[in-house]
Image (cartoon, rainbow, N blue to C red; front, side, top):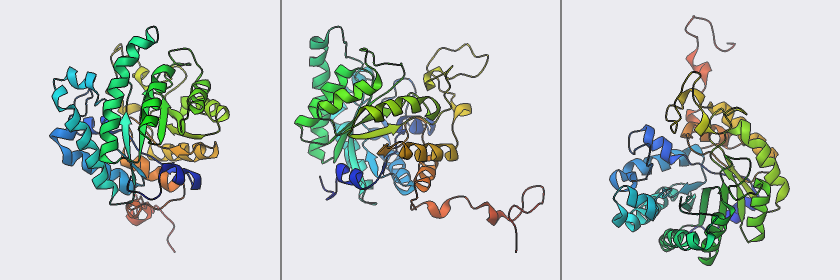
Length: 336
């Protein structure tokens, strides 16, 4: 670790602002394929990854997350690039580190759900999952990450494997579940699921992805009330509802599609709505606040500014008074 002040030291002082959403944003920009969502862009267009890291950095993100989400053995095999597994993981960390140095940001390694965990056969599936996590964590450790984020987990059993691997590597851990269902797939409330992680030595626990602010708050409240350790919240920036509680359910009225949604644009929160989320999350006592799939730099900047921070890109924040008049010819702001 190259930073003298790590993630836990920073969290003791103030909220840490994170930023994710690399998969969706780079898919929108045409650099990776929706469906497999494997981060091949790290190898094929590394400059595109660095640019997005830099955009998040100047928007106020304090952590550059290595783009190794779904960069595990099973997913890489599915797209025929298993032989480049180590190369992709190491390169992703190096890209994140290069940009982090431009703003004294931390670098996080990243694990995702494996899609191989089976709670009905925990011992059998653990051997597969543990090996997948150990590979990624070892490469991240050797490349010099500051901590590891294991995210979008929906089994407590799989989360505990990730936590154990991270702890054995001697790195701080942030473990977050995706609360698509009301409980984990192995039957725990999200508050209890996070408490189990805390009792097992997790440094930061919480929720990410799946739900937008409107439908994640009550679960966050339960998590915050259930644990004493640092908590994290990184929802998707989509207008989820009780009828459509997670973004995978979102579809326009009259649509009969049941496929994973790609046309999510009509449901996207504005930067100002995500700024309100950041403030509310802080008021709830959440320590690590960020954004997940669908998030973009303008969301992050607005969240940073709502938390009272001035970012490198704040000089370009909207000032509509400088436009002088609106399109109907009327003044936008009062003029002395």
